[in-house]
Structure formats: structure tokens, C-alpha cells
Length: 191
Image 1: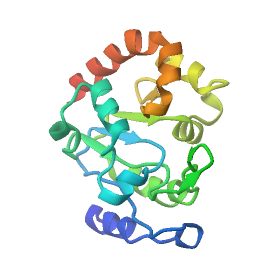
Image 2: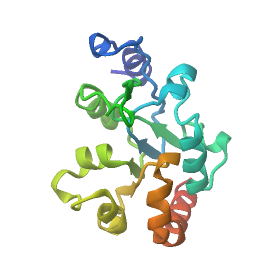
Image 3: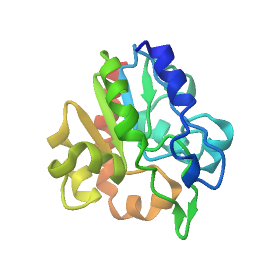
Image 4: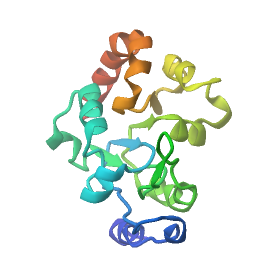
């Protein structure tokens, strides 16, 4: 399947429509030439409305962590973006609901098979880490991120850059002090 047809099929996907309280709007972007793949959770409401991945406060923080401009970030020859759930899952009691479980098994294998130039995959948050690391992940997200070197060179594990994770960041100063410079250097070498 060609990349354009594949992406068209994804953007027209509606397998979770019956389970959503709003219209489906898959948010994904990549190119055959993408060098770094970002696998996050699912679009938030703002991203759902705009259709632009990481077009929110989490995206601002993520670009700061990566030390890249919006132009570099949204250039699909640099970054491909495929969340675990392609559509906004809706609001729960304490934030957005978890990503829908249909997307990753249905679409990720064919996308990953098409992306031959990916040098690094960023696994952002517990859902992506659980899915891709499976039994290799540590007992919790903090320990998985602390042991990020165990997953290199293929994966770089990160917490979600959501403003809601400010408490986690303040409790884990080592993350921005020690890990972010390594992430930034790795991204610069690849791009």
C-alpha cells in the first residue's frame, strides 16, 4: 500500500466512532522519509479541534525538550507523529480518557513497515511504553524513564510533557538536568 493511500485510509478511519461522544478526527502525520518517530497518547481536545498534532501546551514543552522549532518539528522529513489512539478519546474524571485501543494494532504495523528511515522512536507516556516495551519496561514510568539507556538506540522513553506533569518534573529534577541534554544531542545528530 502506498504511503498516500495508507495515510488517506487512516484519515478516513471511523472504527471507534460508536464509542466516541464526538466526531472522529484522526490526527497523524508522517512521511516515508521521517527520521524520528513520535508515539504519544492521543490528541487532546485542542488538537482534535485544530487537526494539528502537539498543537497545545504539551507540544510547546515537547519542542523545548527536543530543542527544535515548530518548522523543524512539523517537517515530516524530520518527525513522524503517530499516537496510540488517533482520535480524541473524550474527557474523563481527572483528564482525558486513555487512548482508544483499536488504533495501534490496526494501523501501527503498516505505518512502521513503511517508515524505513526512522533512526529513533520517542515513546511518550505510559501507554506507548507499555505497548512497545511490554515486559521490558520497568515497574513504573519514572523507573522506565530513569533507565532510558536500556532502550537505546531504538527507543527514547519520555514522560508526557503535559502541564499536568509539573509535579512529576519537580520531583524528578534529574530528568531535565541529565536526560534532556542527551535527548537534544541525539535529535541534533539525527536531523
